Amino acid sequence: TRGQESLLDDDAVPALRQPVTLNTDASRPKLRVLRASAAELAAHAQQLTDIDKASKGICLWSKLESAA
Image 1 (spheres, one colour):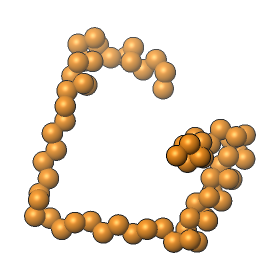
Image 2 (cartoon, rainbow, N blue to C red):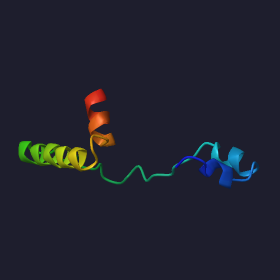
Image 3 (spheres, rainbow, N blue to C red):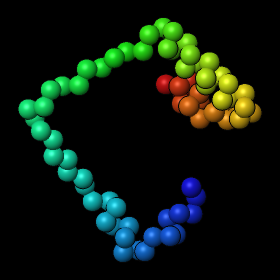
């Protein structure tokens, strides 16, 4: 949220900008990607519609999907 950067020491900020190195095991099997079915996509769309109504039009996910 806004203002949280003020909680950090000035000394801590450069540490947050250092590159991150990930070590992964190249021999592990690749992950299988399961695509959503038409029914799952419809349920997701309905959930977003419900959230948008409950939040009075400020559902961020809906805004991001329509911008894509």
